[in-house]
Length: 84
Ligand SMILES: CC(C)(COP(=O)(O)OP(=O)(O)OC[C@H]1O[C@@H](n2cnc3c(N)ncnc32)[C@H](O)[C@@H]1OP(=O)(O)O)[C@@H](O)C(=O)NCCC(=O)NCCS
Image 1 (cartoon, rainbow, N blue to C red):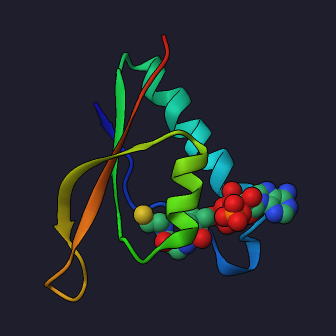
Image 2: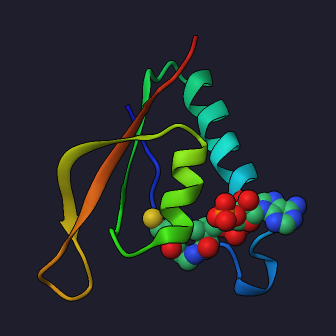
């Protein structure tokens, strides 16, 4: 299992496929080291990130992840099974 953490694209570069390229590259690297899953946590109120991960076929697991900055809400965990 590889964990994808802290994906960030500079605001001036957003909406041009940089996020897509980063997710694809993490998946490529994960396969190269023999991982079978990529796992990540995303805030419920982050539609840009959720849309990106859904487009890459990550599924919500229903599991709660790390605490968000407000110290109350938690990330929602998503995973993707990698094709060999
Ligand atoms: C979430 C984040 C990483 C996405 O990065 P990004 O580079 O904007 O992502 P993409 O460009 O690949 O995709 C974003 C949108 O641009 C669109 N897009 C992709 N390629 C495009 C292109 N060549 N021209 C125009 N639009 C394009 C996508 O269709 C997508 O639109 P949609 O969400 O309406 O479907 C970025 O918004 C970010 O850094 N946010 C702040 C940090 C954050 O929340 N990180 C995630 C933590 S879990």
